[in-house]
Image 1 (cartoon, rainbow, N blue to C red):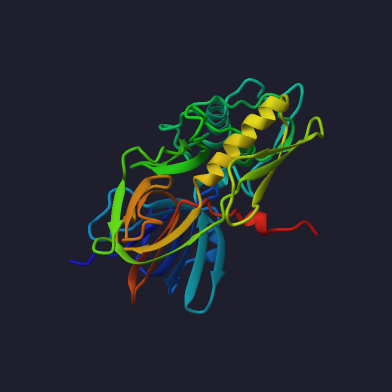
Image 2: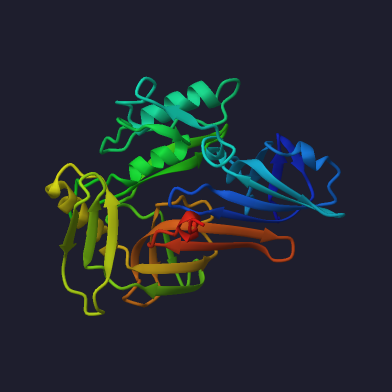
Length: 346
């Protein structure tokens, strides 16, 4: 029996879903979905800010939605309505989110990222109902706090910026980064802080040409061997080099505040090691892995030494239409570029 995806808006099922494109963009970006519905019989102006639940039902009936979100955009024609929604982190990020003004007298000095998110969401977002679940909210292994953060801030980008400055260096040769993500539960979407997994940890999914892979492509990037560092506090510059590159000199640049030169050098080495561990960019059109979460480990076996082995899932896209059914695209290993990195100030 074929099961069709199920769309709910504010708890009410809409039967006329014709297509959707669901993006788990990764790299601390919001998950988003674009949906097309036939013959709308409702007022599109009433849809802004409404909640969406999407159950994939691919092969079986799901009990937990693959996506929950908030409608941010509505476009209509004579016969269709197109909706765009983002996940519940949209309550604390983006142009519609409320800014917080942090001063010397009113601040979050000493608060860890997890503590701040729990307090802010409890006090400002989950006032009359649970909009963002806190059941799975933890803190980073390496404590990151908001001491000395000042100015007008959006809550989520402020936290992401601090997390991106920190790496878990428990294993110095394999520094691991953090991200703020969403995990769906039976009642609501839960905000979580995830740490990258070591590639030696348990694999969540195995894919091969005989099992799960329709097609794949990959590119191997040059190995960075040098990083230039600008200390934004002291205005000093440093350069660190690890290894030799037969492809030629490839470098990376960092701007950040450091305590002292040794702190800058340590961070530069960790940054380089992380880059050197992420040199393959692999895209897989797959038939399984729809519910596999970002940062999960996936084993690839396609008979090529360059890419066979374990990789991190850094983003994925699920699409559906009535004619072709479901399609799944997985991106592995290389962190996707943020949309903001394409933008140049005018």
